[in-house]
Picture 1 (cartoon, rainbow, N blue to C red):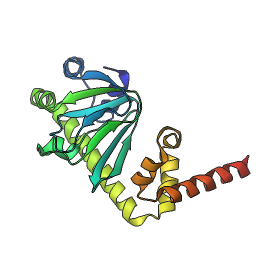
Picture 2 (picture 1 turned 30 degrees about the vertical axis):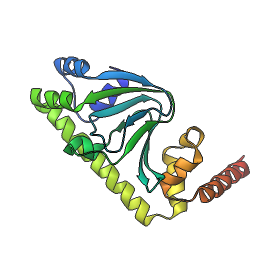
Picture 3 (picture 1 turned 90 degrees about the horizontal axis):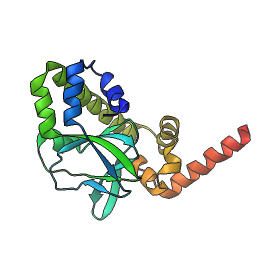
Picture 4 (picture 1 turned 90 degrees about the vertical axis):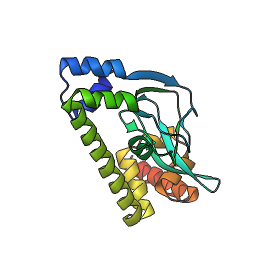
Length: 196
């Protein structure tokens, strides 16, 4: 397992040597091509992915339109979490956007880890809590912030996405029209030019 995944987990718990070894037995690594589907709508989510390299987009279909609700990159965990945690079919599609290297753990492996150590149970609770807080923060931002404020926050928090992700997906993520996104992007570039 990469040091990146250990670093992520160490934000929540300190792993003892035997726990690290056990985690290593259950964590698998995969490499993916761009546009590889990891989870389809209607499938049961069986994995949690840790992104070592690349970007994953999470989206659902509204009629025939793809609606992006999450774009995850290096250092993030991603899953169709409601499906993974409750065992219901996924409403979402998870798809790679670039060549990707992912660490992943299956639902059954996670249950084995939980049964082996209260430390792993604690890790699971804290990660789920972080997911819930992130989701609520995202929902509030979508309801309260103006489109421009959502754009500015994305540029502050994840500026590299603008060069790595097609504009239509970022616009969908922010719940704004692609033309509006283009206008904000142009304004941002003009402001940067003035500073230089």
